[in-house]
Image (cartoon, rainbow over the protein chains, first blue to last red):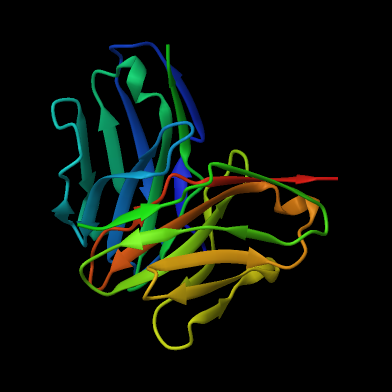
Length: 111
Length: 113
C-alpha cells in the first residue's frame, strides 16, 4: 500500500515570499491533516479535512495560511507571506478510522 | 479538551539496557492512544496503538506499552534497546470519531554504545 506522499521535501525561501506544499493521502482515506512541527516540539494541528470539508482549522493562522483539498483527495497548504517563525516541518497525514499515517514532511526554512 | 504530557524530554540509556518512556494524558472522553517514532529527517511512524481490550499492547521493534486508566498513563517500554532505537518518540491520543490527533512534546531516546 502506498503511503502518504508529500512534496517538496525541503524548501528555503525569504521572508515575505509565498510557498506551497502538496500532499497525496493514502487512497480511500477520508480524513486528511496538516500539522506544523517546530524544532523541539510536538506536531501541532493546523487543519483537518473530512473528504473536502474543513473539520477543524482553529489553529490555522488564516491571515497568511490557506489550505484546500481538491475533490476530497490531494491537498495543498499555502503560506503567503511567510515569516521567520514559520520555519518548521509541515507534516501531512491521512486516516481511515483510528490511527493517522504520516508523510515524510516538508522542511521549510524562512530566511 | 484533551492533552498529552511527556515529562522526559531526553532519556539516555546504555545499549541492551531496558527503557521506559513516560506518557500521561488528560481527557473527559474515551480515547485511542498511540506511540509514534520519528527518525531524523523522517515523518512519524506508528509504533503501537491502544484502541480497546487488553491493556498491554505490543508494537513493532520489540516495544510495548501498558494502558492504565486509573493513572491515565500509557508508558512505552522495551526490555533491551539497540543503537538503532535512537530517535524521538511521541505519545498521542485521539478521541473516537473523526477528530484530531493530539501529540505530546516528544522524548528523545539516546542509546549509548
